[in-house]
Amino acid sequence: MKPKDLKSPFSFKDRRPHIENKVLCVPEYYFEHEKFTMPDMKDIFENENEVALEYCSGNGDWIIEKARANPDVNWIACEIQFKRVRKIWSKRENNGIKNLLIVCGEAYTFSRYYLKNSSIKEIYVNFPDPWPKDKHAKHRLFHVDFLNEVSRVVKKGGLATFVTDDDTYSESMIKVATLTKKWESVHKDPYYITGVEDYGYSYFQNLWTSLGKVIRHMHFRNQKEAPQ
Image (tube, rainbow, N blue to C red; front, side, top):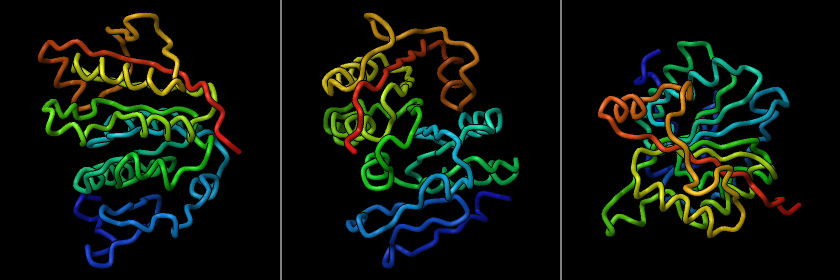
């Protein structure tokens, strides 16, 4: 399968949520998400295994490796760009991976409208775009509302792993997670570790490491039980 073999299920004019063959499309500029009935994870994967979720999956190298190495875990790759979703889909199909749901959609919207309370075991955010300019701050993934939603969907005690090469964004991630009062750092001040081995390959991991950048890994544990 080639990336181009995955076609968009709708035009912009008739955009709507659509799930087929473990690919969920959550369209931008759509405002009736509540009308869509998201299937249960056990029905999507046809088992009751725990679910792990990666936001900002990019071209999918990291999560494809994890899904293949951990077939007893169900994985979700959430990526906003359709051209990247196509690449993840192509790798999934060509590797015969059955335990991966691919979501083309914005992370906060997907979390808020499509994920049930306490449905996820752990989440990962690998190298999110830091959007360093102040005028672009609205595009940053990390904000209190997002992490509040993530706390709702992750089981109490579940782990969130954030990875970045950007020191400034790392400090912002830590600040936002602390502000929610729902996430507790696994690490003491400075709330991150470096030099993590065997975490998994990704394009940006390889790129920033080759350029001599220090990669920060932050781990937070969810402290709040989702409302029933």
